[in-house]
Image (cartoon, rainbow, N blue to C red; front, side, top):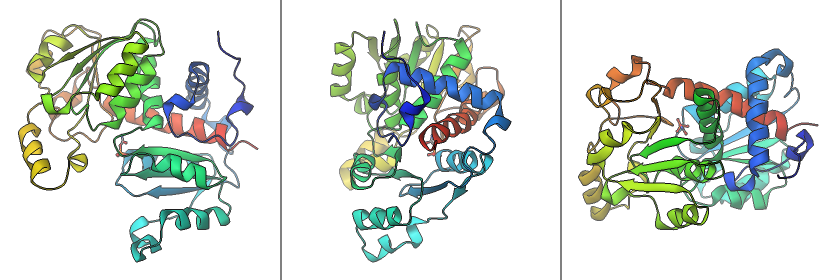
Length: 319
Ligand code: CP
C-alpha cells in the first residue's frame, strides 16, 4: 500500500514520464478526470487567470487541440506560439527560447519535440511546470493517462488486462509508455505484434521482465490469431518520421509501410467485448469500414483526452 495521495501533491509538478508517478498518483488522476467528465461546471473557472504555452516542434491535432480546449473550457488562456514563426527559425537555442518564455510568467508549458529527452531538458531549465506532450520515440505520458482512462472505461478495472499492442513498437512512444503503465497493475498480459524491424526495444522488454509482466512477441502474420484471444488491441501506425534519414531509412520504411491493416474480415471471431484502441492519427493500419462498428473505440479514446488534460491542468495549476 503506497502513500495516500492528496490534491496538493500535484501542485506545480512536471509531467515528463509516466514513471514519475506512483500507481496511487495515476489512480488519483484517473479518478479526478472522471470527476471532471461528470461535473464540468465545477471546473468551469479552474484556470481563470492562468496561461498555457504550447511549444509544439512537431505536428499535432489531438494533443495540442485537447490541451487548448481544456484550458478554454476552464476559463484559461493559451499563448498563440507558433514554432515556425518564432525566432527559433533565426537560430535561437531552445534554452534561450524557454528562458524567455519563462520570464513572461505563464503558468504552464506543454512541449512536443522530435528529440528524446527534450521535455526533461526544458523542465530542468525553467521553474514553471512542464508537461511532455511527446518526446521523440521516448514517452507520451498524457496519452498514456488517457489510454488508461479509456481501458478503465471499457472494462471497469486496470487489473487482469489482456491486450495486444500492435504496429510500430520500435519508434512508437505510446506503446512504450502504455506497456510500462500497465505493468503496474495486477496480472496484465500483453501480446506485442509487429514487423520484425519494428519490435519493442529490448531494454523496455527487460524492464517488463523485471516487473514480472506476462508478455509474448508475435509477427504480424499472427495478428488475427492474437486478437481472437485478447479483449483489446492497441493499434499504432508506422512512425515514418522517426526512421533514420537516407537510403537505409527509406529501405526499411518501404519494407514495413502498408504491411499491416486490421480489416473487418479479421474481426469475425473476436470476443463480443473486444475493442480497438489507437492513439491516432491512423493512416492505413485500420480499414475505415471498422470506424462505425461497435469494436472501434479510438474516437471515444481521443475525446477522453480532454477530460485527462483538464484534470491535469486543474491539479498542476491549482493555487
Ligand atoms: N495521439 C496523439 O498524440 O495525436 P496527435 O499527434 O494528433 O497529437
